[in-house]
Length: 321
Image (cartoon, rainbow, N blue to C red; front, side):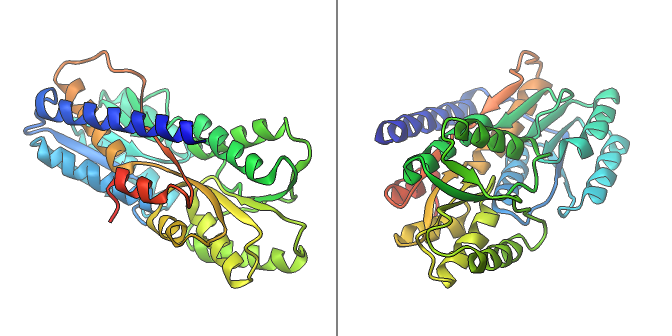
């Protein structure tokens, strides 16, 4: 685990160095370019940090950001993607989104001749998607869970957003790892995380199940992202059931702060770098509009496995306050 952490640190340092180098020498201007920035919402840590970074980077490069926030409402997201086509910007960046909802409208953007880029929303119609390696993220988190459980136990799993590509890949990775550990079972039915009121809903669901499952019958709670993980963790703390550990992805400030306390029932969280993802997406747009048409289909953003043992280093690397 220590070796994996050091390799991850090296990967992030390399990525940051490369990004700084490009920012100083290789990123073309966006002067006068109108860049539509569409997001599913800004109420969640990843969304808000990535979206604000996109806005800031467009301005830094001299462009004009057109900001569109769907407020985590699929109907509003469809409407704003329709608006994008009508506005005919120089490029579009779509931040997140359920594939079945956004794919038809991403196709319309491409068919309209507007260069389309995505962040954590892989699509056949996007020129480039900025993303963590979500399957690898899922494997890393699942392997940490298995190690902590010593290959045996029962887990509660939140699986409400399988249609979101990143969440689906993380869940698939969990199932793949558990194939090798038949003594670890996912308790059925699986939990469904919701939006909005994710923390409160997860808290309520877990609290109810803690009354059903006595100590020793549940060993872990898994979520594809860390907002339901936060609700589950708070439920465990209030119920004094710290023998159960939670696992999730993103590294939102609330989870990182709980980890920093040292005694929270958190097994691990994969810490992402949303601000870096947002900057990379805008920089790829700038390169493309300047004539660099050979961009890769995906641009990876490194992540780190955060635990109570290394959370201080994680905060330092990400620049958390």
